[in-house]
Length: 254
Image (tube, rainbow, N blue to C red; front, side, top):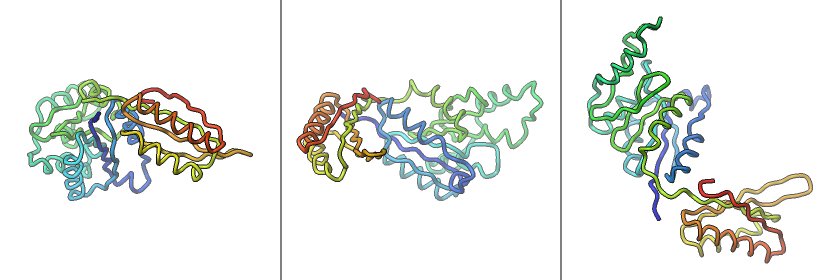
């Protein structure tokens, strides 16, 4: 079974400087995995034109879906739109529907729909708008690239409106095998179990508490039966070494 693959691209000097803490990668990763979309990589890059263009090209070619956040606001350093348009060989246009939404949003308010805010209606030609129910300024889809605002609440609202139209796959089945033994001791067991169960991956996470230590082995796969079989095989292998192992079913997409 093959699921769609995705990449997340966070754009902004403020993230790299540490002034703003990214809250979008983790949230999007959870939503995509629950949707059956396999997140393969996430990158954070600066507001540098050449870097944005080349990274968008690279990720768009390597994955089924790309999700960006940041750089589509009204200020001079918001250059994401012009860069994504260039990456696809498109012009940026004043989008009539985007402009109409913004005019309606600012009507009867004390906020001026000035030149800077009008910039948020500039969208690459041939792009499809993504609704923004919070602040009206839309995101958009161009090719396989989905462009979101950087503000977490707005990004989340945009994604929720888009969720049902995204391609999906089989949600991952994830099981935790809690092992009362160090990961170094069971490394070969995990390796052999993973090799023997096609499509399964096993990650190990050591834990420590007063007087105890152990390993949480997370077994993941698209086929529930194969994943459960791998978890059972891992638990048996750990028990053969004289340690306890308990399978904790987290369910599909857990």
